[in-house]
Image (cartoon, rainbow, N blue to C red; front, side, top):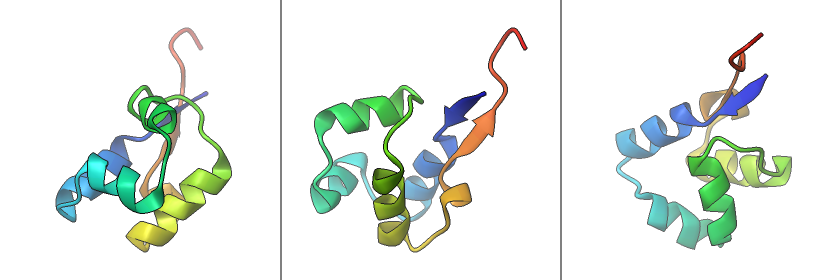
Length: 70
């Protein structure tokens, strides 16, 4: 299984929040933002901070998807 943050990017667009604003407001490292963009694993604590910021549940910003070859 892999993680997909497609829902996060859609939610940011819907709420008119740029990824730069998200990074600044939550004081996220640039490496963390890169991992989010590449659908790589990030710390659960980071995902929970994003959820609190966006007032949503974790399932509203990410999905577990089958990786190719399964």
